[in-house]
Length: 217
Image (cartoon, rainbow, N blue to C red; front, side, top):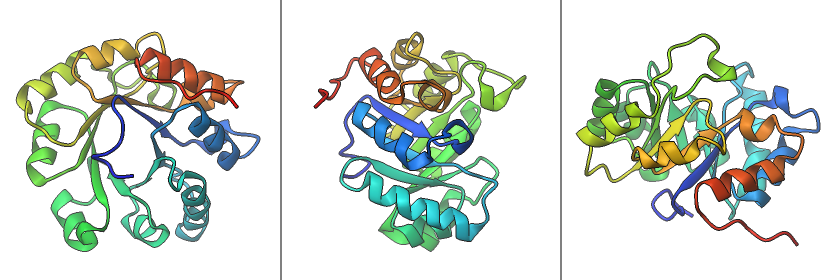
């Protein structure tokens, strides 16, 4: 599976192990059964060795089933054989990440305005994670843009060949608004990992995106 071959709309899961008392790998596996296409490992408090260990376990869980991106740490992404690295807006420049990684992995960039999105796309980013769209647990009290930001980014990048995903407070109730604004999919944290039934919550989001929900065994 590659970024270009991922089904549309894309449902991405960003990890937060504090929401998974039963274990992060178990929760991710349940989310994959529900229809997640991409997992971004985003445990920013972990030192490199522990993060790599988690990344290696998630690589096995996602192998052949979903794309795996690692937040910020290009070294960990390369070491675990991830499909991509997700660079924060103040992280490594896209061009530098491409120079270091070569064609081995895709380069994502998190952006918060039109200028940032345009700069990332022009630098060659393969995935733009745009937000914060709605109020969210992970950005309490921070500025929110609404789905209009997705429309604005799409307007200045009508021919962007990579993925444009919305993030921030996205639920099954508002995911359709994000797609209607021009996104290729959505990324969520709490809407899946904060649910009592991880697979069920994932299936609900998958249905809200208008894509096929895997049948239960």
